[in-house]
Figure 1 (cartoon, rainbow, N blue to C red):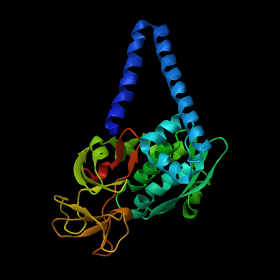
Figure 2: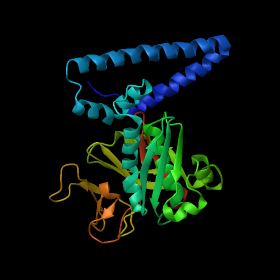
Figure 3: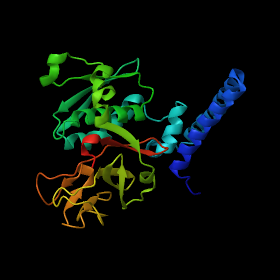
Amino acid sequence: MSEQPSADWRRTGERIDTLIAASASGGTVARERSEELVRLVADFYGAGLERLLDLVHEHGTLDDEVLAALAGDDLVASVLLVHGLHPYDVETRVEKALESVRPYLGSHGGDVELLAVTDDGAVRLRLLGSCDGCPSSSVTLKLAVRGAVEAAAPEVTSIEVEAAAEEEAAGPVVPVDALFTRLHGAAEDSASWQSVPELSAVEPGAVVRFTVEGVAAVGCRTGADLFAFADRCARCEQPFDGAALTRRLGGAAGDGVLRCAGCRAHYDVRRAGTCLDAEGLHLDPLPLLSDGAGVSVCVPATVAT
């Protein structure tokens, strides 16, 4: 059975919203009935999914490998999450989300630590290290962390960030709204999440160049993992026209090396674009989020061309 392109699921969701909004033209009662219909249908299919998982479990085939496969499929995981059936608890999903952005944080000299997930759904984090590069790096890093956590665990009620030791003069715990004030003010232009539909269709081993919000970028997929970087070779400073994704000599399955067609420099995509030929060089990674319906890229405005 062929898989429906993820872009189709996004359009389906948008169409549902449009139909519900259109029903308001018939008055408040019509809209309420439309919303009730959607809830009933969702509950009906949710009950069916729950029973399906129960049957698979009863027959002894819902093992760790199957659970990992369910959680690893963005579309299936998002549907299970809607119905409260996700195989991983909130803390596990948050930790996996943080793991997905660590290569990007590391490329800017930073890291993040999960301190706790409280009973009331608050996530407590600690940002570590320093931000290296453009003035908007800190904002972009925080946006990447927050976006990853909210995508993996939408039921989270708040995100609290504890400052690192050298930053504690401002107070031990900073509410998320205060920490991200710049995202809602003048620095809102410094970084933003933008949908990039063409990334959903990238095949394993493929490289695609694209432009989002005026930023030239390059995307590639190795195995099931998708990566994006600013479209500029760190060694020859030229775009990745004709670049290829190869496997590192002697590397494990799933290793991905992006090769510049111009200067033949090689970059490890899993290590935030670290150059394998020249020490200290690396690409500029762009954080990615996939919600099962599409892929979004975090774009810092300061790198726009």
